[in-house]
Length: 208
Image (cartoon, rainbow, N blue to C red; front, top):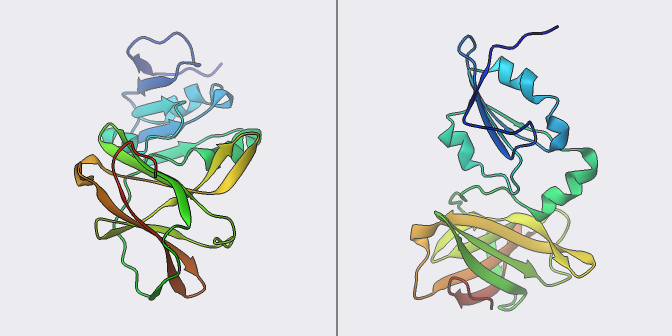
């Protein structure tokens, strides 16, 4: 029988707990593992392999955990039948500034809808939908917010009994959101061009 030299930080009821932290004084390295119930059987083996391990069942994945735990290894375990759900819950990861180097063309100002900014702790979630017919399967989505450009995650949004696969989402630092309104533009790639398809002023918690 395999023996483990691990300790659990804090009180837990079982491997089903939403968050579990373990320590192993005879090993090295730090792990963050995002899992579902299928990861329960893996937990003791993974905990035994690292000096520090953090296991989370939370959705969406809070990727700030990686910095908080100073992890050198990140594992995502997800049952195959749940993989489609990942497109509905992009990870919470602060967007990085990007530079657009190609030609930019303004083709519309209202081709996005359900655009909103929602505070979530230290970040603000910016999300919305793009009207049918604008996106190709390989289109990238960018948001220019108060003059700074970020790349957004594509996102499926539940709409009754169907999924709208024209959604987008990104997370920006809360201190960059302006209380009196934010200039927001949506740009998408089309071939070698950037198409500017939406412009508006958006306030936090306001859908426009």
